[in-house]
Image (tube, rainbow, N blue to C red; front, side):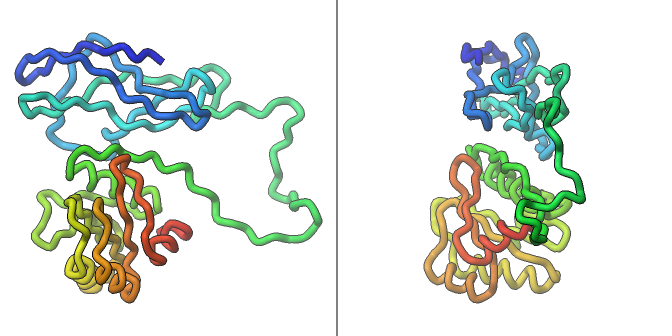
Length: 253
């Protein structure tokens, strides 16, 4: 991994910057950073989509291809810049996901194979791929991170509310409403009850995210109403804090 800084110039104010891409651990443990495209001009971010939030990066150590947060740079003029990344092509002989092909002698399981012991076992739901969090630097990042997580859980068509409405509903999806509290105060009882009432009027499921946790009465009321509560850390990784949230993580949407 090359940790040298990459020179960039803001197209809005012409200020020069040196950008060092953040490194995240690959599943194999190797530190990995997106390959910045030297000489390319960064572009101001005026509108975010979840597709643009991720880039494909391949680990040189194990060949695995994964989705990584799109590199961004905040200029002192106020512009947020999308840093260009070199496109990744699959290495010869590797699958699109970066996994190795079966070696001679490896026999993949067939549909009729039974587990050792001869007994039938219940079929488990297929495991989801590991969630790739989005580092939270702004309130908007917190909403984006929560949206990515809800999509990972299986909710469909999760979209940001633009601009954020007075109802406080930051995210909507098929049969879903969600609120994200990015403040430094624990989420209140009123916030949980208003979210639940809004979900009831639209026949949707409600999910709440908070950066600073929840007031004790808010947690008790969420338990009574069955509202899943999650706490977001600054890495963008939600953690369930009540039984409804743990059940949602286990079963999915």
